Image (tube, rainbow, N blue to C red):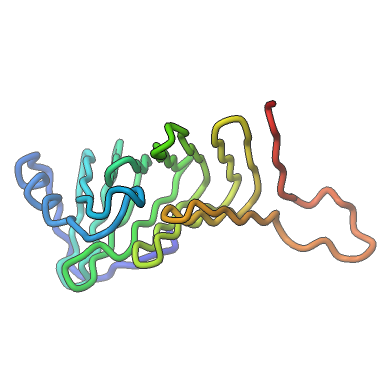
Length: 178
């Protein structure tokens, strides 16, 4: 993983009770859905490494992180704390998954190679082989940004196609099923 390089002494926590107590500290003010203004973040994993100096927690093995109607799934996910609150959640794997149940009943589901959730801006950035589905449409690209508060998407393909190059470079695609 490219984010959160850790060089300080790490503590390995394998006790479910200790893990549960640490995860209770992951509460933050924020909205999983604009109708639900405050939700606690909870996490479950097979293992947790905590770097007390940096405040970075690395969860590994069947990781599930939830906040209200939002869930992130992966094999290895890092949680960064700042001033006692979660500031960033980063995961990489094959693939990292995300889901959100919206107040109208629609479900947003995404798979990608990486996910980066910047909690202060309510923004998720999915990178690498992104597949996103919401209701009757599907979106694909190499980078998709999703703001969970206002539910806006922005998608980009891979590198820009230069003049004279083949158009086979990754591009954004959208499919409407109805």
